[in-house]
Image (cartoon, rainbow, N blue to C red; front, side):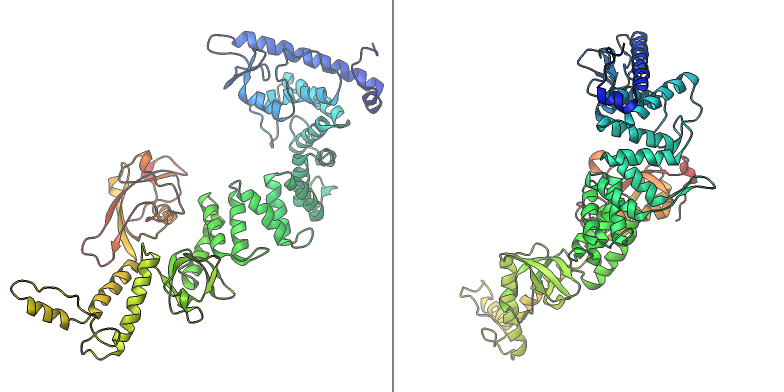
Length: 560
């Protein structure tokens, strides 16, 4: 019998010969039981339209067919494969030898079955039926043996035991055991166990009247760092926070930036907000109001409330200090480098300490630092050649302003040379005389007025139509530079807590939905006119939502 035991001598030495014999019998018994129940499930649910899952032994959901021809739930198969089980079908699997892999796999199959019974991770499993409790007890026994061995399966088993004892999943809660198993798995380089161990050290737990797990921020930081380096998102956030605050070690802004940036790339709202504030304050990174605002907008768009709060404060500060940030500008009045005057570009960023815009100019490499008084907003659609022509006319006009309006040519006179040509029939001499008497600066005034007009704010009236509730319709007069999130905030103010808000332009249809919260009305294709225009611009907007705390639209909080 001992010679038939399929286990390495090292394993027998680790567990003890008697324990190995008992476990071998347990493996054979549990595998046989699971195979028998799996076959019964297949036969019970087999029909032209349904099939049984060979893993959870229930009716297959989102059926996936294995290479052997048997069926399983897509989630069951993916769960096993994600945990290192290469052959999900137990019916076609030969007898398992006694090893850490087999001990872990059999226990995992029971765990997956438990999940199908709506027993979720990170919560207690109370009141298991006797049959389920026996299977789970067997799984705990196999995992306990596997945790004493070496290899990836041993680390997985130790982590699973840590979670079972922490949350009380089919066993009595025991934080001491939980931390011990997490520690064993973490030392075997298990990323999730390292995160769980870091979280327990960071939070601290009351165990009973005589024992408590005290906070240990140094240990928390160490384990969170290990898990973060493996890409664990929650540990990235925790480690970045500890580094930023200097908890459990020195303040390390660069480390905080590194892990917040990695989490922000995965669209984690809190990471976007934290990274944005790093750039706003220049902590561990080169200060950049433009990058900071971009990340705050992303955090707000992903639903982070802190991101929304910080963004409002930052937008207000930008409007006061550098209103031309990330806008098209034209250089003027620059004495140190007069050759740059009239050049068009973009104010890509703003150096707070130097009180300078950082501009990229068309046709010139690199960034140019310019004082705020040396840049102005470029007219919409302005090109380098058009601005150069206006600059030339402006220089001529400066001479006109200083001259005596007596007629003549060039900057020392009031009119430009007239083109030669024949006068109009029936009064050509009078027309020519009138043209020669008209000051040329009237033409330049029109050019300048047109440029100023282009710089003026444009307004649009949004005709807000709530679907199926006409009496709640209202109008909003806004600048075309208003962001979509501002409109959503106004709707929340009017209607109270809402969810599933959909806003459409022109008609309520999916193709017309406005989705980008950070975009302005102008960027969303909604144009406007100056405020003093004779005919206002009106655009129809249709929107729909659901209230958060009830389903009765009559109970909506609404203010006229």
